[in-house]
Length: 66
Image 1 (cartoon, helix red, strand yellow):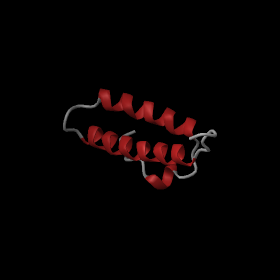
Image 2: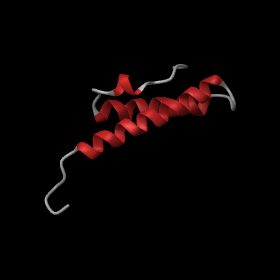
Image 3: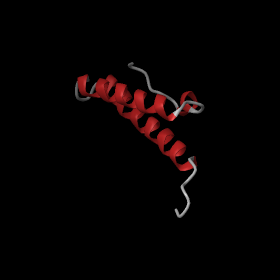
Image 4: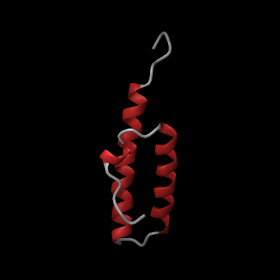
């Protein structure tokens, strides 16, 4: 994947999907050359995916006492 993942693409995805996508993009990052477009896109995508994961986790119900 040499393109940037957008927030709109992730809007209705499950936490499991987002976690899987995050791992996939992390692997692409490790294979990319420093300073390359692929590396820049992977870093931007990881940031977007991280925000989507945080948003989903923030909306999950909390157990009593929290």
